[in-house]
Length: 189
Image (cartoon, rainbow, N blue to C red; front, side, top):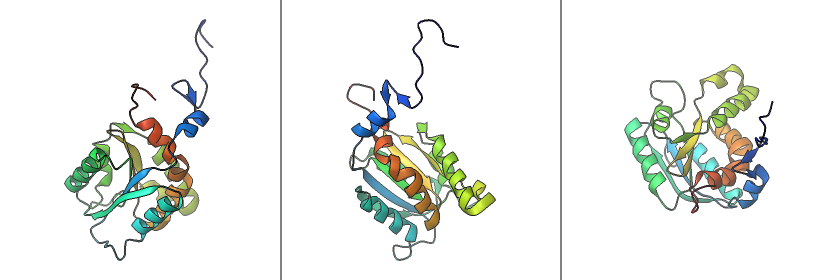
């Protein structure tokens, strides 16, 4: 039932502009930072980080920085704050530390900082993962959100999981989500 004089709600419409218009206005190239969170990976064997960098480049995005940090909550928080404050970074793709083992700290560290969570990302990622790996998908705490206008995606450390998240979720929407997450000069999107 619609109240008299109320505007109808159009699914997929954001701030008076439809999803297709937002995507048209979105940047084609996004400046990205890639962070591998691991106590064991090195530059030589970080296959997930290498895949993320390659996939971003193949899709026309720029990787402005790439690093490996330890799976330590304080270090993850410091890294996220530093990257959110960097003018050269619009999106951050993190891999590792999203499981349920005592060593996995990414979820707690990152979700404690995010000003806006993108809950649909984790939900869709687990759904897609379930199709590939079955019930073990529920162990993933992949998460996404926004901190100070910078978009963050935290993925599992497995290369297959990173590939799935990039191909099916992140790359198709990266410019769009960056466009609507960053503050505009007129105070709205």
